[in-house]
Amino acid sequence: MLLLALESSCDETAVAILRGEPGQPAEILSSEIASQIELHRQYGGVVPEVASRNHSLHLRPLVEQALAHAGVAINEVDVFAATSGPGLASSLLIGATAAKAMAAAAGKPFLAVNHLEGHLLSPFVGTGVVPPHLGLIVSGGHTLLLDVAAPGKYRKLGGTRDDAAGEAFDKVGKMLGLPYPGGPEIEKMARGGRCDAFNFPRSMMKEPGFDFSFSGLKTAVLYTLSQRNPETGTPLPDELADLCASFQEAVIEVLVKKTLKAARHTGRKIIALSGGVSLNKALREAFAKACGREGIELALASPGLCTDNAAMIGFAALQHAFHGKSSPLDGDINPNLSLVAAD
Image 1 (tube, rainbow, N blue to C red):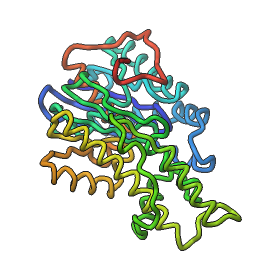
Image 2 (cartoon, rainbow, N blue to C red):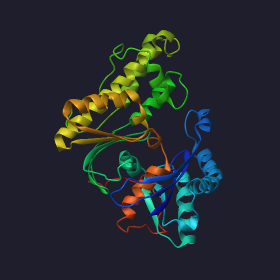
Image 3 (spheres, rainbow, N blue to C red):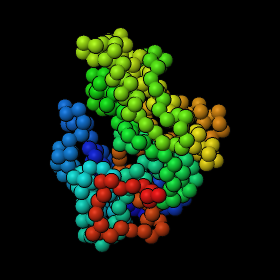
Image 4 (cartoon, rainbow, N blue to C red):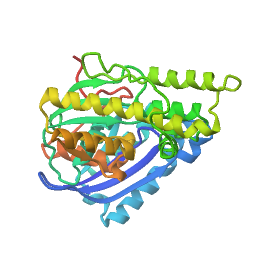
């Protein structure tokens, strides 16, 4: 099956072409991404109008580029897919509308894909088989812990009650005067700091359940800055690395301990880590050590599949296309689309 996928949920325009069959590794024939990080950096965050305008500019050239790199013609594509949510409405509309138009013109099926499902299944692109496992999605907008029985069969165990882990990284990075996005910048600075220099809180560690909260940690950093440097509330130069390392360690400890607790609760022997924050090397190392101690297998998405991309959307779409599923062309995008049904 040959599938063309589009991703435009936020500020990355992405196109991928995959070939796959059930139970086999998906072959990524091409994966093209047009990043807008430099455009939005001057604003300190994503501006929806700027993002959607640039999706419109980049999409057609990226589709043509993806087809050329894959060595296929558009009339050879069997299925067209696009992210339908969650995300920015004005951005989602660009990719979803384009994929529907191509599907209608070609007389081929269209599949609307949940962006979070793309992340969730991304660690298994290389094997093509999604086993029962515990999945943790950590990205700029989401921190979500799921019990996965099979593709499409998900049970939510926990989520963030306020800021997502990636959002906390970006907001703290801004407090510390680091460039946007803050996550990678904090990680770089943390390598030269002491993770025990500041005793930041680990929220909700003693409460029952598997929910997360990072708002209190963010506030603790803010108070620490105002106490250490009352005049400006900015970090003292010789404390910046320690602040980054201590903050990062607090986030990592919560993510690892909560996830391992959930693994023991469910009995799952595989933990899959995905999303943009999963690129963090310290987080990966902490999970590898913890899983090793518990005798749990750790599945990680390759670096190119961690941040927003269309290959992960294509892989998720393939899992449904193999079972003959498709989506109506008159279906709407949903900026608040959930991955699991409400309790």
